[in-house]
Image (cartoon, rainbow, N blue to C red; front, top):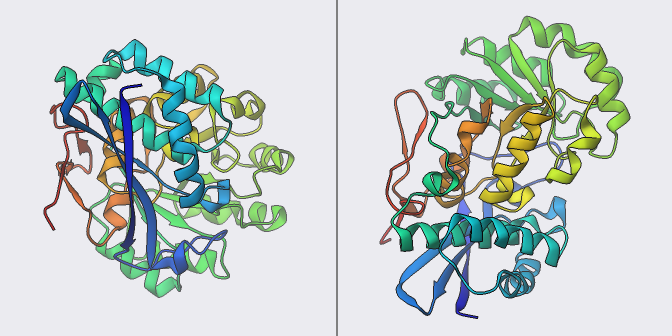
Length: 349
């Protein structure tokens, strides 16, 4: 074994309080993420950087990541700097241990960054993906309607807004946002709705220009998701019900779309496979994120050409992103730098 891993736990303040229906996310004021560095003794001057988000909803903590990452690194074996080896490394990690998407994500991104830097190729090139990527939306957390509307006004440059719902004032929040913003709205209840309330909201959601409904009901209630999709002209998008590629077949005929996140499925390689499988099964594809730094967002952007909708704003929610190199253009599209690996540098401060 020539690979060695080290990690750093970052607790990062958020620009605005960020709450969702099913979790407090560190009371909505800060998030915890894990940055890893991978080194290969044959390339001592090259460091691969990755990121994993320990989401308690999926049973991950900093401690579980610390325990699992060395086991994952043992499973991948000796580094071979090729795209085929990266794909095989992803399969080996999946076979070695179930779940632990955040830990797998951290190692997988770092491996792609390391191989990209060794070979002088950006991650998108390693994946063979060069098509234009859709623009990202911007997400607004749960709060009082007037507060959410003010945040929507500040974010009006974005071509779409994603609104977290599942609170006491969902319709009032959407009305307030629509009063200051005229672009498409995407709503995410994070499992916080009841079926009768959801179906009653459908006419107003259509009237207000909502283009999709994300995970209205608990992850295991596929019956409820199917019931609402049958009654909705808007696509229902599974998030908490669509964790890995293995979940996709069971969602056929249940929902119209799925949300793929690197931190859920295990990294950039598994995300690419999941997006392609979702496309083949006829799903609309939503590429999402956690409240992550530019490391995870840059890795996500490398596969964003496979998505219909993009929600890659996690680093924009953080008050001070520790990394430079990822640029958002005037159309709110992430610009892939063309530099080797992720194309990022760590800020000196």
